[in-house]
Image (tube, rainbow, N blue to C red; front, top):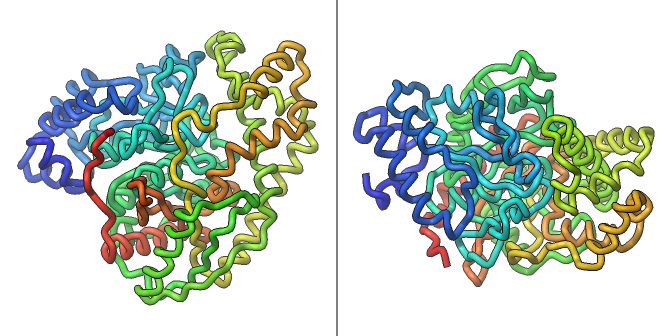
Length: 496
């Protein structure tokens, strides 16, 4: 198969070709590898090739709904036994996973051929993919190499957008599926809390706010992959989640019916929203109205700035616990971690246990408020990003903050600094381009970014759809309806 033909198919389509013996798994793998070798030098999307493992796999008899389809997994928590999970960190670059993670096992059972791991910021803590472990080789957006593909699943989004493969593994703890999907013109579904299993190394990530999934070019790939990941319960996990009796892939093909949709373009933290992001939502609203949905301005009654602070306190605590765990596991020095994450972890040490528990309890307030919103509206529509994808290096920590941080770390007094205006301004500067996504993580609601807009400069800019509890079928059906009505561009980026 030639690349030009390979690029025309999504993963469901490629699986059908393999099943009909019109192409072999080995042929598909070599096309994917050739494309990766052609473009990865510019993108830095794949950080750990697994070509020989994949070549051995395609000599075996493969079964499952995606038998023979090439696949990449994210180099963060998606463990492949015998292969390092680097997590974008110098501290983890040589730490070999002892066993497959549950989601990787599900993907292998589905017949996918995993041939590499995709890049991520260190520990997945940033909305850009520029880890220092990459030694000055940040992951770049295929639509414009000067811009980010987002984070933390930036390598996945870059690989899919560049045509290396049609769908790949991703994860989302604060927007890390939806942000890269929005940056790269792709479909990104974050399922609700507990829907996708997590383990076996941990029961859940960030109290269930984080979840694994995929980024894809088509809605039907995202739906079919959700079926793969939720095929059966994880008996070692903390939840027994209810799933629809009908497969998600079939539910996505059904008409969503007339939906009540509320939309907003106001940043929940009071920061500016770029006219292109407003235009993206306005265009989506017009399209939704054309399709017969009841659309009106509305937003949940939530203090977005307080939500951001409650989220960031938990985020910092998670970073501190993760760094401590990695150091115990690998013997890494604290200086093996990036300064920003060391500062984030150190800031958490100033949070006393009662405050930490209180911040977590506050999450319930936001869940209840969003549920109240969903009593009136089936779906909340917002920009996925508050502005077009930022330029590489644009969110680098300012020199003054780095200099002060280095000194305070040596003195062991970061906690007071974390309460200063200088520190909070730095945090909110990084949050300002992506203020819309954390709500769905905290509340455990499903949310999806769809590639409904291109800027005047040709950069993708997604629109976010947030549903109520258990609304994955509704979001997928609505996404499929939008895709059928106004198919998003499938053109190939020029990588320049």
